[in-house]
Each structure stands twice: as structure tokens, then as C-alpha cells.
Amino acid sequence: MIRRFLALFRPKGVLVPDISKLAEGEARSVDVGDILAGGRRVILCRVDGEVHALDSRCPHEGGQISIGPLHQGKFAVCPLHQYHFNPKNGKEERNLCGAARRYKVVPHGDGIEVFVPGVG
Image 1 (tube, helix red, strand yellow):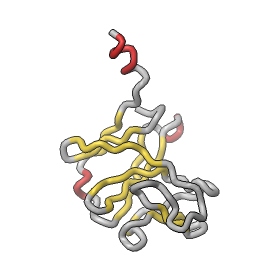
Image 2 (cartoon, one colour):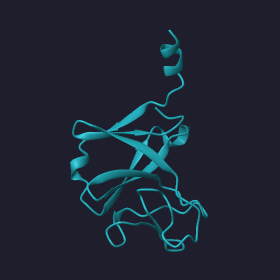
Image 3 (spheres, helix red, strand yellow):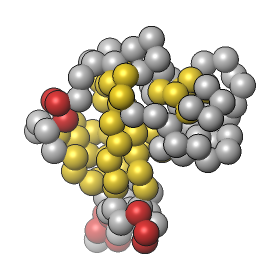
Image 4 (cartoon, one colour):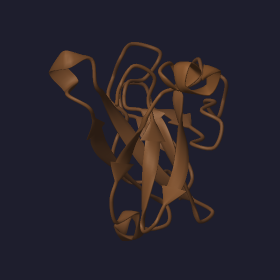
């Protein structure tokens, strides 16, 4: 009974199908939930064969982290001030800015589930 109760408060994953199209060293954006109703735009990055999820907003001034090729094949970039974020831990490469918010990613068949608190 308590497990069912606690399950009500656990974030639910949002399925992103066919993640195999995301190439190594690339980033793409997906909307998780309804953006106008509290959802999030998330940047998916494939680094070292793993997919990582970052919030699309830079923590510095809310700029949008770029999609497409990652800097040096491993850093997501905010074009406003050229901050380079490591998708594996969210930290900015040169420690010039706070860490980008990361979201839990779980493989699910040929896709992934992205867990964004409050969305799902």
C-alpha cells in the first residue's frame, strides 16, 4: 500500500522514441510535456555512446543551449557567452558559469525515457 502511495510522487518518464538517430557528438532538442504549461525543452546529447539530457536554458542568463554538433564532440554550447557544458555532469568546462540542469535518462527499447520533475 505504501509503495502505491509513494509512486504518486515519483516523477514519470516521458518516452523519446528512436534515439538511435542521434549521432555521436551531436545534440538535439525535444519538448518534454507542454512547454506552455510547465513542460521543458531538453537538449539530448550523445557522448561516448551514452545519451545525456540537459535543460535547454543556460543557467547564466537563460540563453538557449545550441543543437547540432557538440564542441570538440563532447560539450554543449550556449552561444550567448560561449559557455561549454559537459552533458555527463552539467558542469561548465572552464567553471565560468554554474552547472546546467541535468535530467535522468533511462534506456527504453530503441528510445529513452527522460525524467523531468513536475512533467509527465
